[in-house]
Image (cartoon, rainbow, N blue to C red):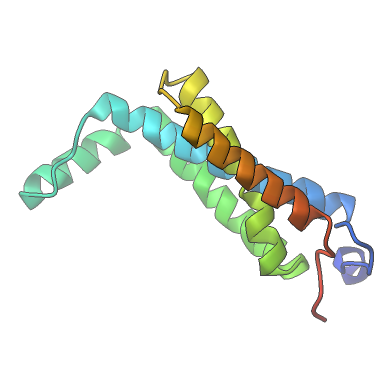
Length: 142
């Protein structure tokens, strides 16, 4: 049974690992998107006094999108642990950076945020880096 989860020596992750990596990307982007969207409804939180921060956190936790965002990030954490057990950290983390493009798109398309040309160029560079990482073996350690 454990043998099914061990990486092979190919240049690509197994289908299951690739799907799990894609799930971590979606959960991270989706969870952070929901937190951002929810906090836009809560409003600005000042760092002091402490009572105001506690009140704002209580108000934020009361929002369904914040709770779903936290759940998505908890699932992201669990999936990340599994991914890191299957492929190198130096492969998984850079490969998951494609999520930054998803975050920028969600911010632009759904939240109405302005994404400057310089940001899109930077995101393009990140995606080019992800492409380079994807051409390397996902596992170089035993």
